[in-house]
Image (cartoon, rainbow, N blue to C red; front, side, top):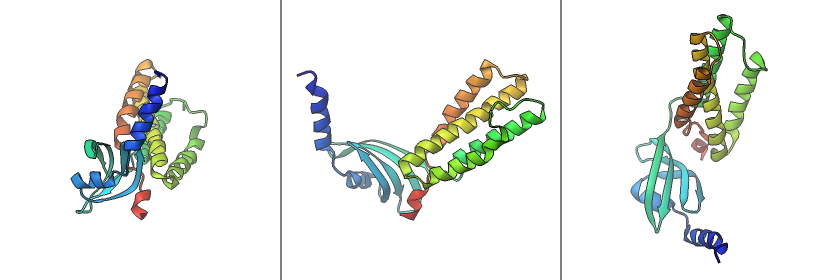
Length: 183
């Protein structure tokens, strides 16, 4: 019986899950586009009556919205800004005599642009995942580059600051995918 509990929980959850767009728009008026739902968790883009747009994640249970988090549509593409910051800090470091740590060197530049463009051609969920990765990698590398330039060498502090900056920057990457504009 204990082995059957997870399956029973899954079946009850799926039986409970309906299309919750009406529940969401009852408390957050607007038009929902690119909506994805997994059991009771819904996510997508909300275009409000005033024209403002947000990416949202909401949890619905028993016909009520229990939890809501929204991410305002950014005026900039965090993935592009962070990748640009990585390039600029890498060039500054190279100008100061530091060696490029990426084995691809400058050949990485067109690849970064191509990956960003590819991400924007994907459905929203996949685009958000890839853009979040690009944001974390770019801003993390830029943060690490700045510490490396300040200390004159790659240190554990460079890696720690890079990881912290990359993790923090991902908070700004949720609204980068604009495939929903064409809905």
